[in-house]
Structures are given as C-alpha cells and as structure tokens.
Image 1 (cartoon, rainbow, N blue to C red):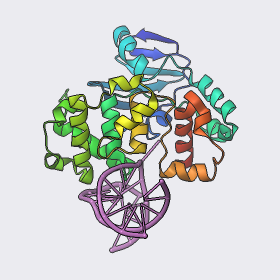
Image 2 (image 1 turned 90 degrees about the horizontal axis):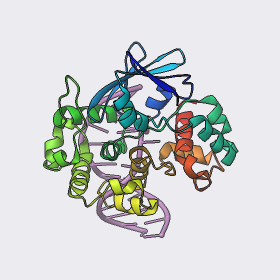
Image 3 (image 1 turned 30 degrees about the vertical axis):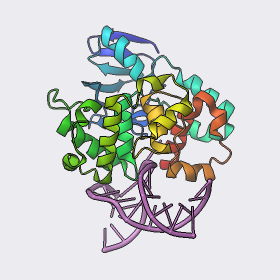
Length: 272
DNA sequence: GCCCAGGTATAAA
DNA sequence: TTTATACATGGG
C-alpha cells in the first residue's frame, strides 16, 4: 500500500482496496463507530484513531511516520494486497465469485489478541449492537480514561475482579467466562503471544480450555486477534450459507484465504 | 409480548 | 458420541 505522511496524518494513496464501511461493519470488530460525516473512530492499543476517505485517498488522522510504521501498517494489514488475496480466493473456490464481486475492500484487522478473545466471548448468543454496548461499558468501567474515551482493560486488570463485579456491564452469563479468560491469560496459562506462530490445532485446543470458549470463539480469536488467516469461524449464519448459497465451499482448500472468504460469506449473507 | 442474536456448558440419550 | 436445553439481556 502506497502512502505519504502529511499534516493531516498518514494518507493511503490510490486506496480502492480499503472500504471503511465493509471493513468496520462486517462483524470482525466492535469498537469502531461511524460519525455523521462518514468517518470512523475507535480506540486501538490505547490510542484514539479516526479514519476518513477523501476521494481515492484514505486518511489515518494524526498518524506520523513512527506511528504508521509501528502500529497502523500492522493493524490495518497494509502490506497485504487484498485484491491479490481476493483473486487467489476465487481461484481456489469459484463458488465465492458472486460474493467477491458484490463486495470489495474488506480487510482483516490485526486486533489485540486479548481484546479479540474477550470481545468474542461476549459475542456468543448475542447481537452486534448489544455486543458493542457491553464492550463499551467494559472499557468505561475498567479501562483507562484517555480523554473522554477509554482503552480496553488488560487481562491483568480484569483478573483481579469477581464475576459479580462485572454486573454494570450487563453481560449476563458471560461475566464468569470473561473472568476465567482474564485469569488464564493473566497467569500465562493461556499464552496468546505464542499463538501467533504455534501450530493452529494446538492453539485451538489451548483456547478451548477457557470456560466459555468453544470452536467459534477460538476461531474468531485466531483470525481477528492473532491474524491467523487460515482460521475459518463458523457460526449460525455461516452454517446456513454453507448449506445453501455456498455449498461446495471447503475451508480446507482455501489456505490463507480462508479468513477473508469467511468474511465475504458472512457479509454477503447478512446483506442479501 | 415475542423472537432471537457472529455459542457454549451441561445433562441426558 | 450425538442431541436437547438453559443461559442473561435487550434490540427489533
């Protein structure tokens, strides 16, 4: 991805492979909000960040050279050519052509591992608006105030609390899952960093030792939090899709395009 | 009021 | 090993 640093921030030039709406509203993340002007804001790794499109340029507001190289390039996965990935995907699985041609510019974000794990524990048997509400209250209650917005509370912080103390979140039965995850991650019993490179089957097994983490949450953590692109989260939507419109799609054949394929199917199914 | 949401733990067959 | 049900809460 070509870019330049200006007084506005980091400007991604000729950026047609980055659709803000498709990327931030495809269900992979819960902290990005659209403003009335069409820009999107979030808190990422304890920093407030705002993105907007200006013609064929995407601006990462306020990002300097240092931030860009150390943070945003990785977070937005800017070294990956998603057009190329999409071609590879349809080559491997032609059944995905329809979804791929209807949508464009979805990118898989590199969220923080703990934030992804915790967010997707909250996501189970829940709807996106309410998931966002619970995550938001989690940050306001236990995160750090960074000037009107709040960072995502580290596992080490939440590990000190009892499930009952999460009552203000109104997370319901998920409260004890969050605490169990926080304690396992905090103690090192669950080693998320190691999962960036460890064999994926081993990672799945380790994640599922956490109470409240089943196959779906483990897969989401691997894809969205650890950027394991071969992960393929299957939920109720995906089951329906794979049983009808996308019958014949085989995750095992998709290789590193499995994650993005899943995202296209999910988004396509929800919007048609 | 009713249905159900990017599921999982638990019990029963 | 597979199948049924409860789970907390609130958006639509």
